[in-house]
Image 1 (cartoon, rainbow, N blue to C red):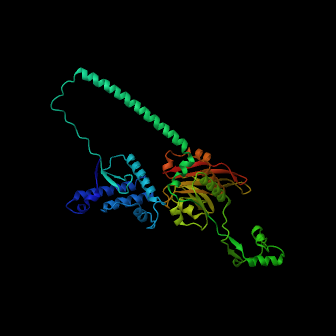
Image 2: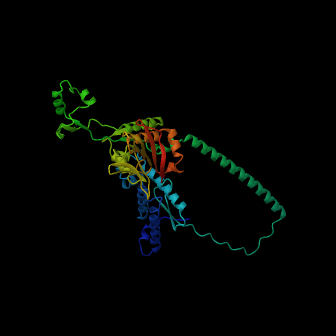
Image 3: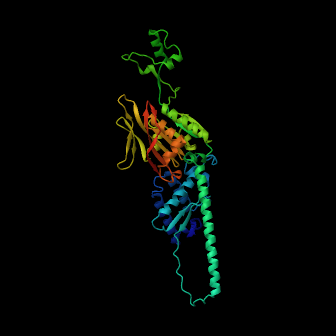
Length: 440
């Protein structure tokens, strides 16, 4: 291939005396659009932003090399003084773009007129013209003199030894490669591969739970009840540990209730999942922080890897998963998971005659390229038993290893979404099993 550097022709490219440079620029822009509309980039919003920015920066004739901080600020909206050492969003995204470009050109049915590459160690793209045609060789004017028999014999012997040596070297190389791969496979378990992107930053993993709005009777209502029932609900211990047995036919006003932010009530399944996740992260040596309710924001999710727990009670889960293959849907008072394709599958909770849940379904999403710009995992069920089962799935090495065997090869370098289902007995979820998966 022949490389050409647009930046060396910035002055001439804009001039009508150099139409060839304008033509090359249009070829590059055309190829850029082909890449961004391909299946390798179409749904990867941040990869598209990154590639479009660096290509346009190069074509605009900027002579200074692109800096990591510049991309972080301009593309990923980081503050101008952000610590690039603690926030590797640019480096991670650059690697993702290189991988997608490689897959794009590997799958290209024809040779493009120009290649766009992102060299390792640089954020400045390289533009290469298509491979030149192989020149035709003309026959020599005079035939070569016949080779002596002794030289022919000597050359055959040398050739045989060369073949033997090459074969031995190849066999040795294959043996070493297989040994390395086998050791790597043993060393990197499913847990290691699944959580590996979390170690790309020094930031702690945020375990993010939702807390619903809680209303509590006012002190005036407690005192009013205590007048008619002396000796009851006089202490805070009584008030927080016993139901207030109000007359079901009586009337209370909203002024008798108040929003009580002191109680960050967490669903039982969410709490079980958070404990399992925290224990796993401690075991694999990754620090974590628990955040509940309003104790975290989108800004926090943009600066740290995170596990978002819960579905219909957690607005971040609903926003992050809304454009994925499998999504949570509330329709006519029913809660479900729906596959967003033509004729897609639907999963719901099921109940017995007593109204107790007998099975639940959950989504486990592992997003290298999430809307937050950080590595994000979603652990969320239709109901709390599904969330509990999903938390067990991602934190149990045996369950995770078994489940990932049914997932398409190459998932460690891709975004991944898995639907798991669990049977529930006496409100306790059983081992989760994979019923659907999609990677991209």
